Amino acid sequence: MSSPVSAVVEWVTGLMTTLGAPGAGIAIALENLFPPLPSELFLPLAGFTASRGGMSLVAAIAWTTAGSVAGALLLYYLGALLGRDRIRAIADRLPLVDVSDVDRTEDWFSKHGAKAVFLGRMVPVFRSLISIPAGIERMPLPRFLALTTAGSLIWNTALIMAGYLLGEQWHLVEDYMGIVSTVVLALIVVALVWFVVSRLVKRRQGSQDPR
Image (cartoon, rainbow, N blue to C red; front, side, top):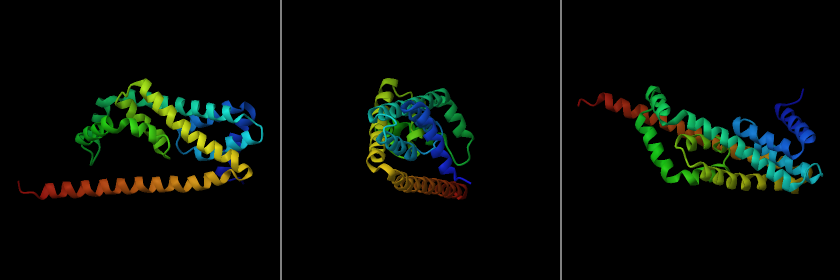
């Protein structure tokens, strides 16, 4: 029985074989919408395919970057559809979350949103998620597209070139980047645990305050 990773590789390989570079672009667009799909696997595989003559290197970079932008744009519009009012209403109903948390997040994004969108395109997990707050905050669309395209171009080019140069050993890129993804997820879990614990302690202290 093939492993899930082998099944994904087989699917993407078939997509690239059938459609060439546009197939790689479709795979990366889907990866943006469904983060469990690994661009760390798709992009080096596209580079390896280019090294074997299955597509041109330039086409692989261009189409995967277009796919990244297309997926990010859909999530941007999802954030815009949610909007600030809905996010505040959701936050108001969530346990341990205050509307003031949303306000602080908005303040942070207004100051650092451009860096977050650009650099977020090169960080596992955040690549997809960063487009949603950009939509919620209605970052000007031309600016969002420029930052997303630039960040995606750097990330895609690096991983495609790695796969191109490694040849038959292209899977080593996914192995090392998988470690990075695990570290990022671990940091997210630690941050969530810290938030929950600190909020519980704060509310417990508030309930014990006689004033």
